[in-house]
Length: 590
Image (tube, rainbow, N blue to C red; front, side, top):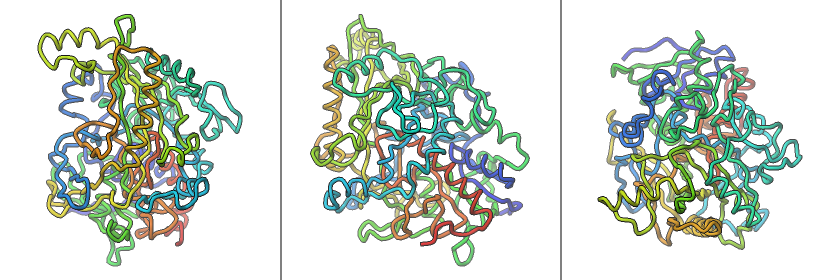
């Protein structure tokens, strides 16, 4: 074992949050080392055309995703089952390499609604404390929309997000989301051009009295230079967003938007192919002294540091906390403990609409995050007491691009193989588009993360175990929202529709992709007895450890989490720079 020279801060993971914290801390003059378990990746040479446009490599062999052969997790539906390893990418896709999941995301870039951040108290004030089921462990975020607004805004400016504002400084703006929290200014870029499915969605939504607006997308609609001097080019609708890095410097990513600055700094060092094994603690286990990791040659190294930032993929942060003894592990039987608590996901169903040959859907083109969306069934726009479930949903039309390897959707009753299948594919492929319901996922006492008692990873550590299943609340919400989406779809008179709303008693299916929006497990709060980190994402138990990402969400809302993840990272970085560095120690006293 070799011991490296001590640095001011070590960052575990170089995705969005790792890049944000590296930029902010090096701005403050700190010497920063970033450890990324995967390879160093950048637009050139890794995502160049035509190299990156390889569906077999990207969508089948999962070139840009975590290798499950070395490190995975086990999954079960309830406490009585034995969890089994997640062996093939299915339900979610953790990233790998510099940029992390920020390289292969689609680009949907939402802010949270103000009421998403005080979810529990909002429901209690609207419907009474008895409205929330006992087994539902939802909590308020310990930070408000107003506090986060400057950081939502800054992250949008860094990403060159394309969109249409709905409310600026309290004033409604035509064409935007009338239900959003007030913004301090417009998006940096105008909304992307719409495609046929988005236009049809907007038309149907307006006929039903809903309020469609362009999806905020971190896919540049025009040439753009961000506040860091990084240049983005306009999206060329290549259809290779999801699963792929962007060949055109058009999709915001840590690689394109932040790392060009970091790579030039003498007080920043990036060490790819570095697998962090644990956070090292001092004898009283109240202070981190650095991390232990395996370098690119497989040799064990110790990196001492005054500050440790956990910025890996959401559940991997939780895994490191459990392995390192940071915080008390959560016990679902007693409800005590905090690390691993409130694991949540996203409640999503896709609907495909098929038309005759007069409708040119052309799904092979696409913009990852662009399209049309409505919030009429999200946040305080719905009467949850009348509907009988908690949580909101967005309904949207997107077209990130599809191809023959990623899958060809066929109308119901189509042949499964042979020349008849080919004929059905030829007749339908260019004449379809898809819409989706994406809903919130409430937190429950028996949905959590812990260490598996049986399985170990390639490094001899216990795997992380996920205990999660759909509850009646999420099934009921999904059924209602799919019904609303189908009403809109049928108004367009398609030849056929495919959509599978969740059925009563249906279990979580790990083999079918839904989203990579895994949340919770190291949740933020105002009480160390019910949360793992405080309002600044600082560990309650080890004050020089800060934990980034969606693992801090007490529950998940109807939106994609990346906008919130970025805003919280900037919020935490501001507290570190302006408070912690001046007086190291707890920023919030219980």
